[in-house]
Image 1 (cartoon, rainbow, N blue to C red):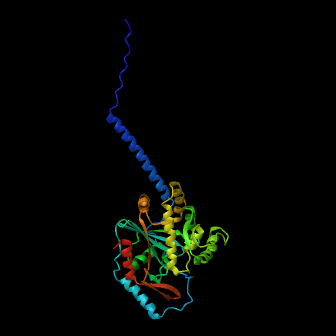
Image 2 (image 1 turned 180 degrees about the horizontal axis):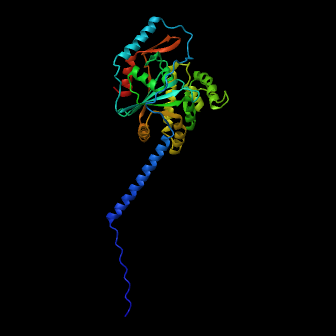
Length: 362
C-alpha cells in the first residue's frame, strides 16, 4: 500500500481588517514614540533655563547709587510738585483696574547692565513683548528707563531704579501700578551674554549712521574687556548697512547720548526685531545651536509647563506681525530735572490709552 502523502494544514490567510488594525497599531506606536521623543527634546532645552520661583521675593535694597546724574539745576519746585501730583493722582485713580485679555500674553523682557553674576545691576532695557492672538501681532513696547514714576513703597524716581531696588517683582509691580497693564511673566538676561546670541546667528544687519559710529566705538572698549578682547577690537569704520557682531551690536544698543533714551530704545527694538527675523530662517541644527547658547543665560518665572506651551506654539507666533511700540508715546511727555536726575515727566492717562490701543487693539 503506497504511503499516503502527509498533508500539511493550510495557513489561514489574515483578513484585510486584521492587517489594517496591525498597520494602524504600528502607526500609533511610531507616533507615540515620536511625541515622547519630541517632548523629551523640548524639556531637555527647557531644563537649561534658570526657573525662578514666581513667589520669590528679591531683597529690597536701602538705596540706589545713580551714576547718571546731570550738572543741570533742578526744575522749578512747582514743576516737580506738578509731576508728583500727577503720579499720585494716577495711583489713586482706578487703583485696581489692570488691563488684561485671555488672548493676550505679556512677557517682560528685562535686559540688565550687571557686570557680574553677583551684581543685580539696573534694568537697562525693559521691553514688554505682547503676543495678541486676536490681532495676530507681537507688540514690542519699550518702557524708557528715565520715566519719572512711583516705585511702590519706595519713592518717586526713575523707572529703572525699581529693578535695582527690588528685582523683577518690584519692576513688574511698578509697571502695573503706574500703567495699569498686566505683566504675566518675565524673562531676564544679562546684556553682556547677549553678545553670544548675536554671534550664534551670524550677526545682525544694521544701518549704522555716520553720527552713530563714534558713540558705538566709544562703548566697545568696556564690552571688549568683559568679553576678553583688546579695547580697540572690532571698531566700526564706516556707515551704512552692515552686519554687526555680538559686541558691536551690544555697543550699538547701548548708545545713549545720541537722540537720548528714545533713540536708544529704538535701537534695542531694531536689534531684537533683527534677531527674530533671523530666527525665522534658521535650520533645525542652527536653531538647536542658538538654544544651547541662549537658554542657559536666561532666568524666568515661567513654569516648565508654560515654557513648553510657548515652544510648541512658537512656529505660529513667528508668523505674527512684529510691531514696535514705545512708552511714552509721542506728544505725551517732557523732560524735567529732579534731584539732579534728568527724567521724563509723562501723561499717564494718555499712555494708558496708548497701551490699550497698541497692545489690546481697543
